[in-house]
Amino acid sequence: MDYGDTMAILLQIRSNGQITLPAAVRRQANLKEGDTLELSVGKDGVLHLLPKLAIDRSQAYFWSDRWQDGEREAQDDIENGRVSRFDNIDDALDFLDSDEE
Image 1 (tube, rainbow, N blue to C red):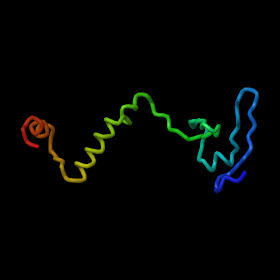
Image 2: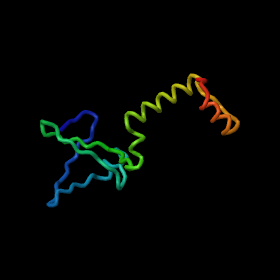
Image 3: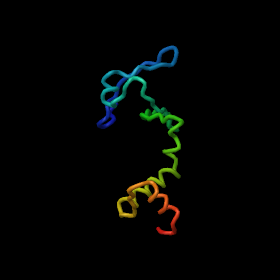
Image 4: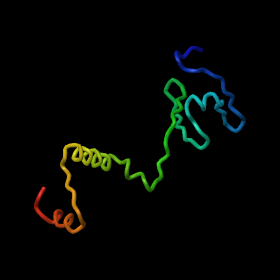
């Protein structure tokens, strides 16, 4: 079958349901041992494999929408000069306790 610029190969399903991705495919997709793939099946029965990064549960908060919104806001403040620098912690705490913005 011709899939445009994609490489078509034949895979065989083993008795325990396993398949092996050939080395050439792993190299082209930059996959390494232990990588995670997401498999989805389309309504038409087409299988899609997508590489996924597993995130340690203790770090998942960082990727939440709320946290990422805060990261974008902080980056915008930095890029637009809305930052303050302090020589010591006491000056920083005094600033935080003040009504200044």
